[in-house]
Amino acid sequence: MKFGDYIHKYFYDKSIADGYTLRIKKENIDTVARAEIKRNLELEDDADINDKAVFESDPYIQALGKYIENDFINFRLQNSDNTMVE
Image 1 (spheres, helix red, strand yellow):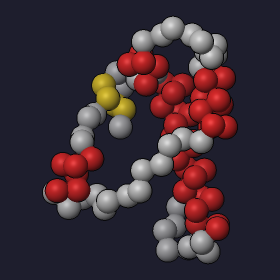
Image 2 (cartoon, helix red, strand yellow; image 1 turned 90 degrees about the vertical axis):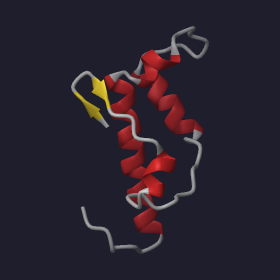
Image 3 (cartoon, helix red, strand yellow; image 1 turned 120 degrees about the vertical axis):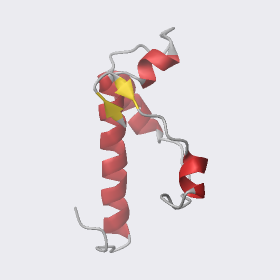
Image 4 (tube, one colour; image 1 turned 30 degrees about the vertical axis):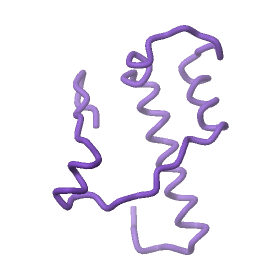
């Protein structure tokens, strides 16, 4: 989560251990989403840039959040799952 200029780091394994998170299947971001994120960041495919700077940038976080939201919506539609309401 991002709070102003601070990114809160809470590790997945710790969150599972304390019972706040269920194990999930991790999936790679599909090629289309990855290309869209790069396009939003206006990066060239061969751009030599610090990964940390990219992953902490507002455009990356917004694009990744949008990808997660769309993926969740698609999952609900494909599985006729209305148990989680917006």
